[in-house]
Image (cartoon, rainbow, N blue to C red; front, side, top):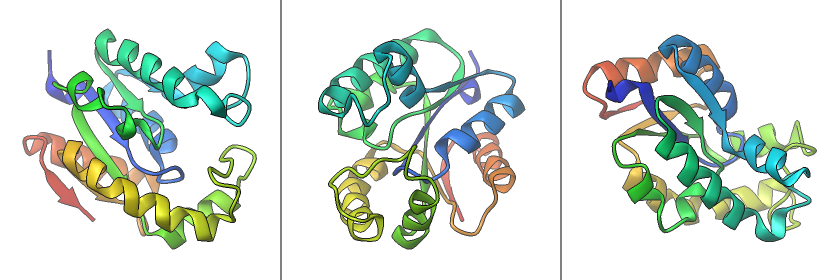
Length: 173
């Protein structure tokens, strides 16, 4: 199986995983899976409504999806907090979509219905702490890192494809 047909996108919420994931999957001619949407579908409720047990649900969904086969998977922003993530993602090209906290906060503010607050604090206060605390985990699992601040979704896809073709390693910004 081509390693470039098994891609997991990780990164903080609003980094572009869902948008880029759908475009990348089309480019690679594989399925697209958004784990946040799967959790919502299985629960029959929104992420905000299932937040109390979201991480457990997310881990189950990720484990199942990563065993399934070729796809581009947009993992939830906190997927890397699951202790089994690195093991489950073995054999997948893990791509970290990164952006400055200011960029993420602007994106979150533009759609608060889809991206509920994790702490009850305003996005500009919350996101910096979340990004700083998770960055070491993203770095530990990702083979490719793309900074999405100044790139449109199509350009991010091109950078990922370029890195995949170069052997699946690199930093693109």
